[in-house]
Amino acid sequence: MRKLMILVALMTLAASATVKAQIQTDPEKRAAEIQQQRDRATKWVDKLELNDPDKESRVIEVITTYLMAVRDWHNTHPFTDVPKGINPRTGGKLNKLDRQMIAVSAIPSSVHTAVMEGLRADLTEEQVEQILDEYTIGKVAFTMQGYREYILDMTPEEEAYILEMLKKAREEAIDYKNNDQISAIFKIYKTQIELWLYQNDRNWRKIYKDWVDRINAAKQE
Image (cartoon, rainbow, N blue to C red):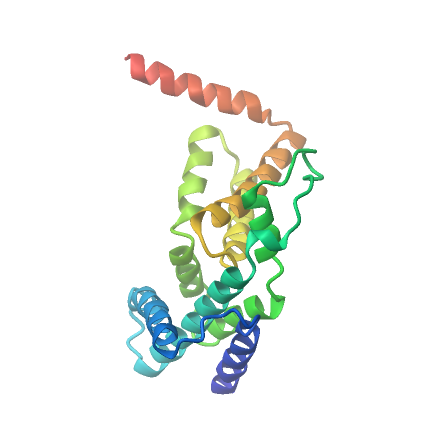
C-alpha cells in the first residue's frame, strides 16, 4: 500500500510538471537539472538518518520530483503572464514580486498534496517538518525566536497560535521557488498574527517600539 501511495504521488507530480511546451527539452541539460535537485534532496534526507536504503530512495525521489515540478511551474509561468494592474489590498500598482506570486500560486493543488502524502507515507510528522524546514531555511524557528524577543511576557496561548501560523506559512511556502517568494508567504502570515494579537488586546506597534527601545538602550550600555 505504501509503495502504491508513493507511485501515485510520483505520477501526479510528474503529470503536473508537464505544464507548458517551454520546459527545457535538451536531454542532457534536463538530466543535469534533475540530478542537481536529487543531490539537494539527498542532503536533506541524509540528515534524517533513516538507516533504511529503500525508504531513503523513495523519499529522495518524492522530493526530487516535487522540486522539479515547482521549478518547472515557476520557470514556465513568469510574472509577465500576469497583467499589470492594481493591488486591491493597497490600491498601488502590482510590483514584479506581486505578479510572480500570483503566477506561481496557480500551481495545481495536486502537486502539493502529492508531495505531502508521499513524505508522510515514509516519514514521521517530525521528520516531515525537518524536510519543510530545509526547504524554507529554518524560517519557522528564526521567526518564532523573533516573536519571543518582541513579546517578553508571551502567554502559552499566544505562543501556540503564533507557532501554528508559522507552520502553516512554512507548508504553503514550499510551493514557491526562491527566498523572496518564501519570505512573501511568511509576511502574509505574520500580518495575520499581528492582527490576531491586536484583536486580543496586544498593541503590536507598542510591542515593536518597546523592542526597539530595548535594543537601543542595550547599545548605549
